[in-house]
Length: 67
Image (cartoon, rainbow, N blue to C red; front, side):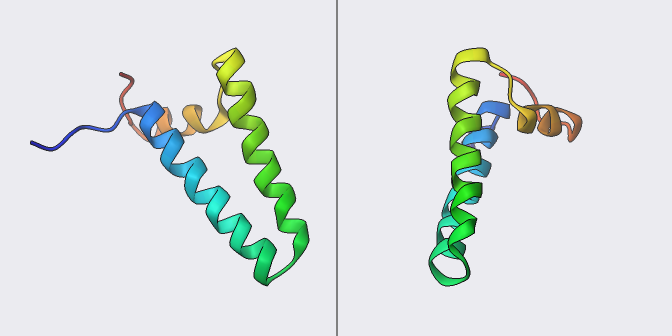
């Protein structure tokens, strides 16, 4: 049986991809890509305290269900 993914699951997937991609770009392209890594990390940090995440708004508009 396939498990359905909800908004919080997709937030983790997207954030993980953004972090891995920006780390690779920071290594191979330009060190300033690490600022994007920090930006994603700070958004995850504030999401933990406030419950507000801009990515969650986008995912809801795309039709991803809440848990």
